[in-house]
Amino acid sequence: MTPARTKRLTLISLIFAAFAAAVALLLYAMQNDLNHYYSLQSVAEKAVPLEQPGIRVGGMVEEHSLTREGDSLTVRFRITDFQHPPLAVTYTGILPDLFREKQGVIARGTLGADGVFRADEILAKHDENYMPPEVQADMQRSGYQHQSQQK
Image (cartoon, rainbow, N blue to C red; front, side, top):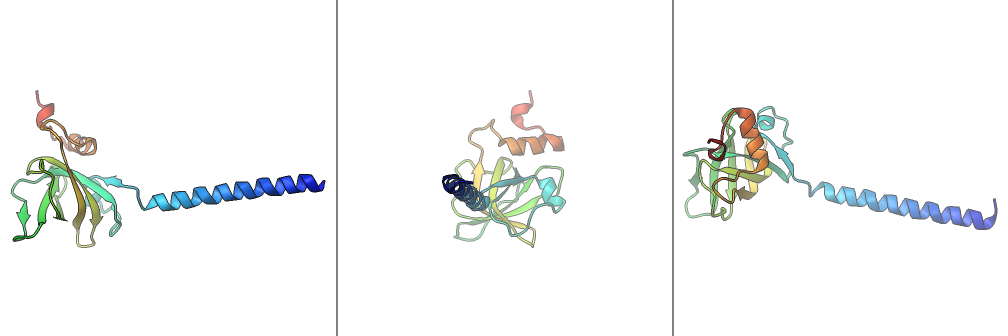
């Protein structure tokens, strides 16, 4: 092999190695930013990783489950898919204007070992006929029909 060819092959190998390292670092960094959606069935089957931040769960806010802690911004409520046991959710912050009982929500946060979901963010529907697609699919599997589907 000639010295020029060896030099070129070394350069190409270094470029490839640097590119592979950059892709690996990018994927590693993005791993923590992924938001994984889990149904309440997955929660009931204990298929949801405990204490992992950034997971999402969704369902309907159970009627008469919303409680507030005194004058603080902490609220507790349960979400249900009407088929599996409801999931207790705790959230500290300002709730969306459209948040209310018997409406679909998605909560992003961490499922604790005690079975309580500690939400960092609450997403509520944006009009009376909308339901988040993940929640709508869970509701259809459980046999529940939303008002917008009943005609």
